[in-house]
Length: 424
Image (tube, rainbow, N blue to C red; front, side, top):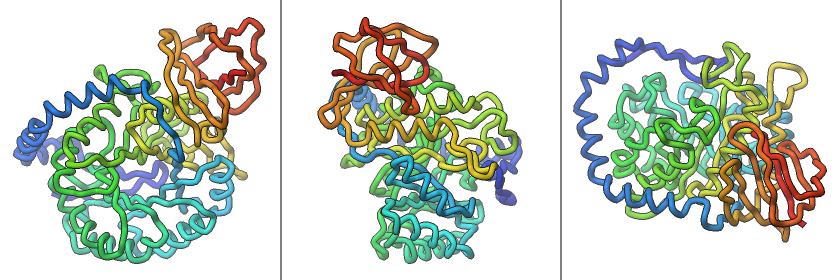
């Protein structure tokens, strides 16, 4: 079964051209694949549960060094390379991710120039290789695309993510066995060109797809597009699973499946913005205000990176009308609150060490050390709460880097908007 591929240029994703009925019929016909999925997961279930409990007990209780864990995706589609490079530098970002779609194979030179410009400015670039249905039914064309990309980009890109969000049918892959067939040729071609591979690029909370794929596909790094936007705040639970619990389960399932531990990367996450109409990738309930997006960005990064279970996170993406940290519609581009929130977080947390989390019930308080300074990143899940630290407060910075005057009695009002409290 195949459907015409239609790209939504406004939201940077494919249109879902298959109806619900057609998708149901396809999955019904391939019911055997779900039986094999169950068997594959059953074989690691006991070990994964044991590891999950270990991850939960240790999470936010052990020191974690944050070297360069912050990534920000960008695209040549806007045609403003100088503006993109300037914004990346202003944000303090050194790691970027660039999508390379298979259907743009005739225009690889444009992508290569963009990536080369990024590399010349000292950025580490990971390329995400996007597929469509035609690549599944015509594997020869996909293999030729991989060979051409690895040949032209292996000296420029540190890693290549093979495939993208393939557990959503609009991206052209209909079950995990098709993804394995799609990804398999990449390994011999990567060896030929000296490329390092990332995958399996599963989107959302569908970790049951990791055991059957990772047993076959020996990725150098394990990736997830771990969105939690449909729950609102990253601390909110989806069927009992918060962001922290999802990360712990992902790490546990991965470790239970693999013969040796490999680092985990989150290669895509964002919150769509309300009021952006056709530019939103997920209009409706998942949409948030620009201020909420900035709050959730910081909170997501801190919760996940302080867990010590994920090596790096890439925000998708720098400039886009419906979800980007910069609104690329006006001239000049308008930096949204999320841009300044990311900039402040990177400046303060990159190169720091997470040293512990307070047990405050009304607020989230994460403690860090950097260059001889002790500070805390603090927020509430909802509303405001007063908190008194046992240590003397030297200064306070707001989410976007604005200075705030400490109170003389040593108390701080926490809000949903994160802030940084420095101790003297």
